[in-house]
Image 1 (cartoon, rainbow, N blue to C red):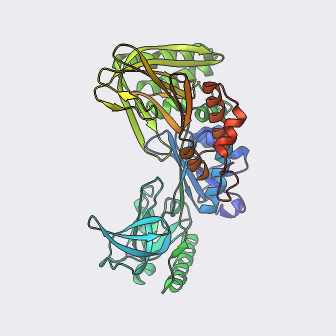
Image 2: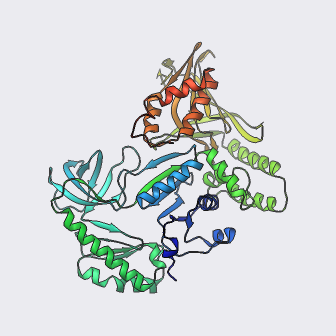
Image 3: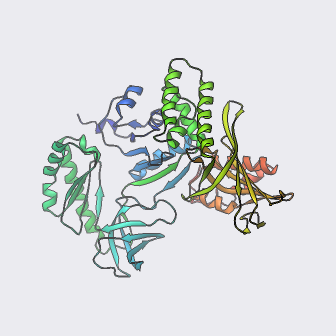
Length: 502
């Protein structure tokens, strides 16, 4: 049965991974159409397993703290806006060129033996090219999309067109047919190979996407024919065309899911199936660990009427025991440019459960001994061998406090790092750094790095809700006026017409 006409006008979303139940509930509530649902999701929501191709796929990455949103650009924008309304404290990175986009770009020469082109501010490594002629404008298909700062794209010669079921393109090598790894049936691959024969004869390569598992033969033939005609038209348009994007391909957005948003998804999932507190945080950070299995056990216990609070506390105690056994731990400091810094290793002085309102918080006190000399960043005070850095990490706080002491025990200063609430991991803790911080030397407290925060806010990486939370936290630290601090943080940003945030 052809189900694509039933979804006309709706954004078709395919959801996979550890967040699938919560995201499916959220998307259904917002009027999206769920397609290619897994057996578990179809059963939980009593929805049909529609075989229609997805406009957008949402799934976790290898680092399960992150989501990947990929699909047609205008549809991805709609899905991401819906996610930003629910996942208000997470970080959003968008590709600067689409995957499988067709562009015209100018060759700028070789660097370290690699050929590069440039389009606007995006560098593209050009591969499979016979010559690297500086100043020449060439047609490229993007096979690696740049997302994080400092990343460059990778492009191959020729145009490319993407559709629901297939991607068609010309390459410098012999035309070929290839398949998504999700097309496992040998019979299906044979059928698709036959459908591709005419394209290959005309010098066009075909890559069949996972959705081709579900289309009927005539539909797939028509689809491929339409894509090839579109490729021919595109190639005509590209002759001597100036630099620019001529086919947008697929947009990619990476979302680093902050702990408050994981807890929000715990609540959403809990409306569908029994869900323990910190379900998504533990599933993300303790992959293939026994803590993940204990979550499954705890949720079975909830289903049979067990009390939530003691189960949550027991899980926290198990995590504390795991960390205490390490003696020394690492803090992963995820920056808004996508890089990850490691702080430590640090010695555990103490680690305990701290009850706060309805939350079960884990608080660790850590110590590091300084081995080198210099100046402490931000504080501007001398760093000397033998200094001690004492750190307080609390999973319910939007800050991590570093106190710096001399060998004799004199306080040199404090660095209050503003970040999303830290999450326990097998190696220590992980949080998203929010750039702006507070430093305290003597009786003076200063807010630093506001301009860095503004840059990321202007780029749409963080939401207005995050900015408001930062202002609230800083006001508590410096005992200042929250509204005045907020005004300073968004100054000259929200009036900028390029600002995509809400």
